[in-house]
Length: 84
Image 1 (cartoon, rainbow, N blue to C red):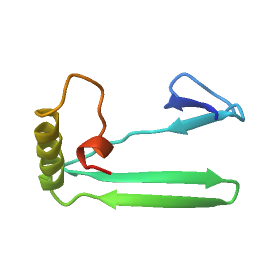
Image 2 (cartoon, rainbow, N blue to C red; image 1 turned 90 degrees about the vertical axis):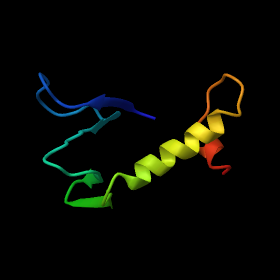
Image 3 (cartoon, helix red, strand yellow; image 1 turned 45 degrees about the vertical axis):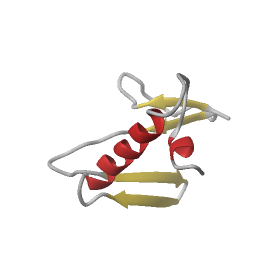
């Protein structure tokens, strides 16, 4: 897989062919809109997720906390907490 870099500050010119890039932008009072854009010459594919409130974030945090309260010290993911 290629290298991943955040942003382009201070970098000019074309990206190396093995480099993946991403940008993060938060504006206004938007509680959660995330768009992933895959761009190629002449076309793009966009996947967008819109959060209407922070309720889903809170529910996920509570699920994770309940799971972690019963676990030994270690490294866990939400896949573990959700039993997937």
